[in-house]
Image 1 (tube, one colour):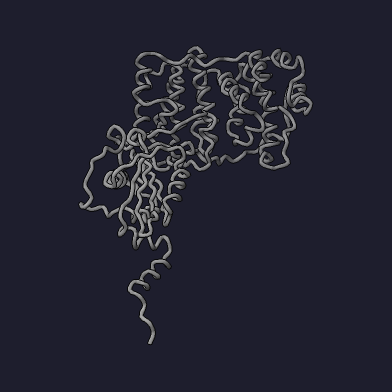
Image 2 (cartoon, rainbow, N blue to C red):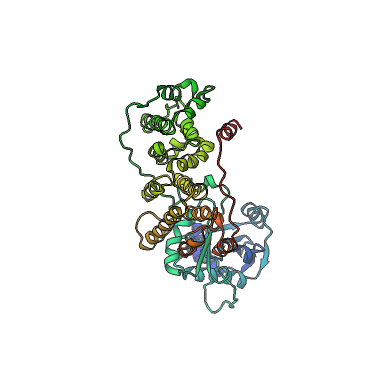
Length: 472
């Protein structure tokens, strides 16, 4: 006769054979709750790192870790540890939360922070991350058996979305805006204006889709020395002595027309090759021409300059570089001769480089501050631009409104007396798509406008200034 198995042996063998996930779902809530932790300062920062432990019969630890956004999103991250010794758990805790001083709290406190944040996030249509479906089994069921503790969620009574440097959270903004209206704010840390529009994963950067037209097959110039010098590999980095003086001695319209012709020819020659590994810039034609045009008052090169502003990031990096791109707004401003209509037409185009759009907006500001008599035209252009952005956002037409770009536009307006545009600025803020990290909140903008504390007008560079900056 076979020996009877000891009572509980089969069950014990069954539990031992369980996968970690299955064990947590089946058994975690039957284990006694152990220590619970949270990071100090979570109520101020809006980000709670919570650890809840349970103790197995062996003395080993089952633990769940939760990253909880108490300002808006609820549970952003969650994962479990299945069967750790006390020593292993302490080591893992230090690895996962390096340098973090964790405060011990009661289980009801941990429970109410987590489920309170989840409930608050659900008001905005946000659910916990999928991994919470496992980690929640380390928690007690959310019933009246757990004592209720009231916490304040949100910031100043509103859902407040904090976007990280990579901008992934930005994709939530339109739906939050539609659900919550004025009861919603957001902010994104910004460390470098050149990085604002670089994130390939950001859903609010306008997608580049410009289709190149047919460009001239030759540089049709009146003064051949202009093309010969600019297109020569010998002068790719530095212009020969006396060349700039010869160009500036020409009639401004003739000089600008020749420089524009060289730019369009060089764009046509190189724009389709710029992404190829073997492409190497043969000359400094566009680089030098833009710098020269920053010191020539003539509309003859405006089409060429705006075509530069239609190019993609790779082209601009190869042909211009950061410093020269700072001179592009001045070149465009000099080419407008106070006529803002071409700039307004450009800003209506879709699928262009967002950073270049900002350069054209900067040219508008230069027109307002440095072209006598052009101020009313610039204000009208800005008014139509702001109204169009708000209208397209509210209707869902066109590209999504990029918060960083919207913030930059407001920042440009603060470079001159924009008092009469305050209603349009308020309407733009009403979309909740203006990044406070770029320009500040509406209260700060109103304060600047009402006090007249506008920024100093943007600097105008002379040719000597430009040469000095390029050789820095």
